[in-house]
Image 1 (cartoon, rainbow, N blue to C red):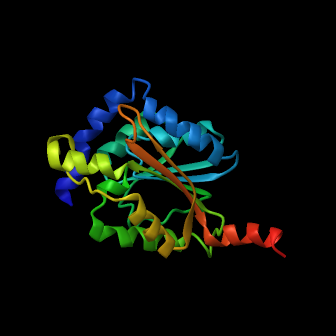
Image 2: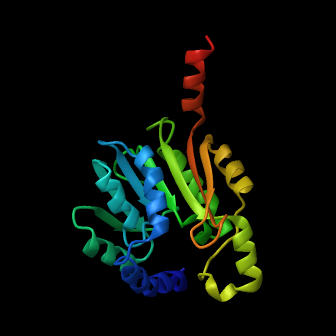
Length: 216
């Protein structure tokens, strides 16, 4: 774990430089979040890095935005770059927020969680879903699995210290186990076609409530 924290502490400098230039991928993500985050919402940004998407959530009208990252240096940069947003250095697989979120952002972070630790994250998310907010939505952005396979086999030098290859199918299965179903799935590219996938999940209960209104 110490090596991972050390790696991302150093990586914070790379992200801080990139923060200065408009990023087409973040612009694409913003278009999705614009339909997801409504004024007055509580937003939890897990694996927030230097707070790029936390800032977007605040700009879209969220009342409370909380960013969480395992790297203390990332959090230092996030606080410096995004005044007015609360950031916490903690493990996202265990952190429980002080408020009930309406939206959780998991952007460019799942692939950096070792498979053995994913269940801890899912268990933690369950703590603030059905009992606290059965209408919670989760936004996931992750590299599309064919490009991860390609990079693993031919360009491992371009990957980070932990860079798992999770297929879309495996993620759908994992989230279904904690009662989340995809509302929307988009595959898109920035440098090449079919580079990333983003998924909006909502709870099974919220689907059922919609169906009950139609099928009485």
